[in-house]
Image (cartoon, rainbow, N blue to C red; front, side):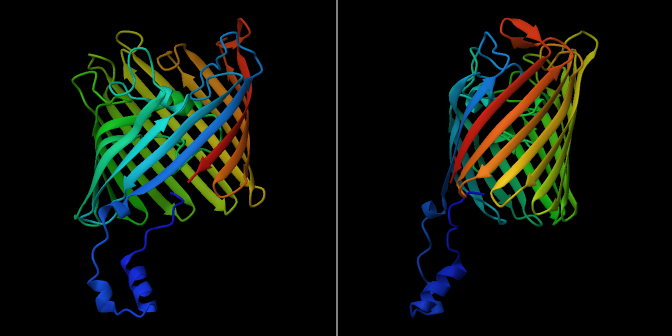
Length: 374
């Protein structure tokens, strides 16, 4: 989705030669293009300011994913993507996402790479994988390395995708993983159905922390031109030196009824054996709804509402039922520059949010965000 102009293909080069008076034979005998001309560079920058009306004494927004700092300007992420795409059977390529900043890398850095026992770092190799499209049928895509998870409706912000809301949902932060390291195979069965399987170290692990591997699968269907349905699942041990399995089921439905409106739903259900109490599986579940309405060619309004139940406290540290509502106006000043706001209210059935030095059940925040991408 990079905004760089596409490199000229063979037909375009032939047309150019013809216009200059050259023959088709001369074009066909021209020297092949150097490999480095096929490498694309893309970038993304996001900067925010967040304010918590509870004025927490710690200066921290509770249970937030990337917008965890109160009353401060932040460079959330600066990303540089270097890639050589591989799309046709027999082609090989690669992709590497280098990110720096005081939000995304600190949270999403994988254990065994840029995350250590003291926490995340301000720099991360968010993705780095090699690709080969095997000449089987329509082309079997094989990736080896580290890649962002396929689970969930929301994404980690980058040049090829960012969320409609500035803040991220509880489902994104606590129900699903961020990245995987291992092997991935994907195949398009047709224009309306594709699938994916993977064998990886687990959730957010560049180096495995136990002797078991995790497996995952996904089916993506487009039963109608404006409707998309994605079903994903994952199973495997995730705790250090422990063979108890963690299981996740994730369902995403998206519908675009018109050119200016889009709707989305996300459902998650997860379990992990013996995660909190011996002999019992911890459980979590949640649902989120999204709506985006284009008011004009440049101005849009986005709504999100969700419910997340951490039934045993294995994901958030407390057995609780969370809910939030977020309203996000967006203004696209130029094709490369986006300005957004974020008004959000969190609620829990337990007092888990800071209000000065006390604990309360609600957390209202506001944020502004600037995005630049190329």
